[in-house]
Length: 481
Image 1 (cartoon, one colour):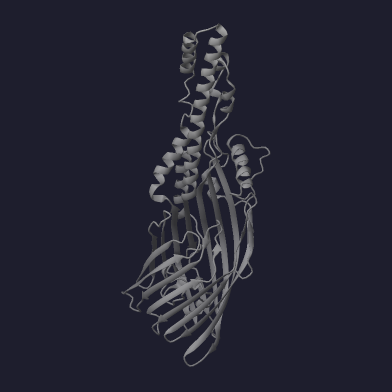
Image 2 (image 1 turned 90 degrees about the vertical axis):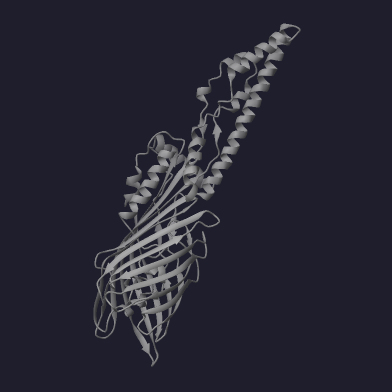
C-alpha cells in the first residue's frame, strides 16, 4: 500500500513543475485580486475579457515574458496522512487468521474426548461439538475484526485526498495590442495539468472463511488449508488527471464614454485540447499495472477538443470600477477516457478493471465520464485611485461550477493593493478568498511586485474543521509597460 501511495504522491508533486493550466484557483496577481482587472497586473487581463483594454497605453503593445507559473497542492487530512497510510497498509497486510489456531482446537477436542464419559459415540459427539463451537467463535471474531477494518478504511477514504494544480502561460504571452481606433486585441496560450488522488473503499473479507463453518469433525479440521484463504477487497487508490492546451483570442473596446466613466466590452474565444483519464490500483493486488504512474500523468491520449466563449463588461470611473464576466457561455463538453473494458486484460490491470466496474455500479465513479464546462457569472467591484495605484476590491462568483476533476468551486475574494510608478518601488497586495461551495476552504493571499515586473503571489489555507488545507504559489515576469 505504501509503495503505491508514495509513488502517486511523488508524481503528484513532481509533475506540477513540468506542465500547467488555468484552474479554478487563479494564478498570478489574480490569486490575490480575484477578477478585478488592474492595469499594473498583466495577469488580471485573463479574468474579465474587457480588462485587456486597461492594460495597454493609448496605442501599442504590452506583452509578458515568463509565466506566470502557478503550482498548488490541496488535500484533506494532509496533516495525518502518514498515519492514515500506515493504517491502510496495516489493514491490507494483517494476518486475520492468526487468531485461528487449528492445532489448539484439535488438542482441545482430544481433551474433551478423553474427559467425556460414556460410549465412543458420546465422546466423538462431545469432541465434534467442541470443534464446531470453537471454529464458529473464531470465525465470528475474525468477521467482527474485518467489519471494523472496513469501517475504518471507509472513514479514511471519506476524509483523505490529495489534489494538485499547475499552470503556465506560453513565453512572451499574453500579447495585447491597442490599435489607433482604440480596439484591443489579445492573444494568449497556456498548458495545464491538474490531478487528484483518493481512496475508494470496499469491504474487507476472507475468501473461504464461510467454509470453516461447515467443519463438523476432526477429519474436516485436519483437511483445512488456511493458506488458501486470502484477503479479498477492492479498496483502491483512485487517480484522475486532466491536462489541457489552451489558445485564446480576445477583443475589447470602449463602447461608450461620459464625462466621468466609460463602458468597456470584451469577448474571448478559448480553444481547448483536453486529455482526461482516470486510473485505479487495487491495494490488495501484488502485481504492477502495464501503465506506470509516470506514463499516466504525462499521457495525452484520447484528446477531447472544444471551444469556449467568455464575455465581459467593465464600467470604469475615476474612483470606481465595476465588472461582470460570463465564462463558458456555450458550455462545451469533453470526454474522459473510457475505462471498464476488461477484454484482453490480465493480472493487476484485470483486477483494477473489475474493481472499476464494481465502483461504477455503486455510483462512486463513472466509466464513461464527461466534463461539462458550465457557465459561470462573476461580479467585481473596486474602489480605487485614478491611476489604480491603490485599490480595495472584491469579486464574487454568482453560481458554483465543477472543475474537470469534479470538485465544486464558487470563489469570493476581497483584497487591498498598492502599486507605484517608481521602478524601484515594491507593489504589495493582500486579501482573503473563500470557496463558497464544495470544501468551503478559506485562503489567505498575499503578493509582491518588484521593479514593476516580477510578480510573486501565494495563497495559504490552514486546516479547516474537515481537515482540508492547501497552498498555492505563483511567479511571473513581464515587460514594463
